[in-house]
Image (tube, rainbow, N blue to C red; front, side, top):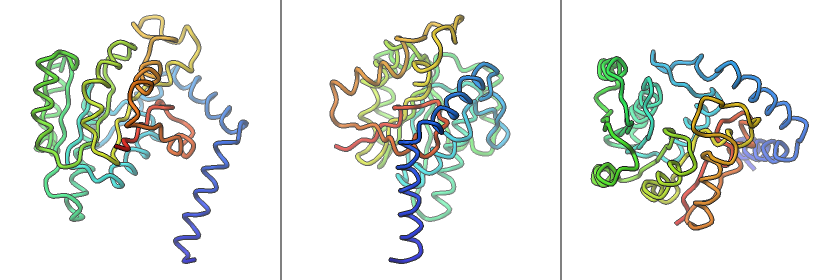
Length: 249
């Protein structure tokens, strides 16, 4: 066994250990619950744009993008654009390493605020980014996205817009199967189901009505995807428990 193989084996054993370490999982959850109360995810930027994600999920996404090597990343939910910039920068790195030829990022949002749009368009990574404004579950938008997706040889999908069960389930039905075999559809903020009931008093979503409940229903009807538990066992702190869906067929 080579030194690299030994290291990979040790890492796999550590991740497996995490899956059974209730004490460590409880500490991670405690941090998630308390940090969510103070909008911890608002503290970070990627190449100058707010990304509104936990660093652990950003690291997981970096690993996945390198592993999958997509040339098209489709994202619902734009906000300040940090995630689009992140995806574009990762595709730029893949190009620089000779892993892909021409990477593109497509972002969809029902309301792309003008100041955010201008900032994204002014960013050096903007040349890789296309933005569509409108509801991600509107029939015309779905058709438009599917047409755009024909440009990709390998596609990765990220869902992070309206977090109600109905909306996320509609997005999953519309876009999950655009993900290539061996790639992922990542559903963010499934953590809503695991947080206390009164965590989102001013939101449309909450316990029993959120991305995780949508994932559960979607997987009952679709056997092309499995939850990649190794990712959350690896990073422990994630807003997407049960949300890293790997496409098998």
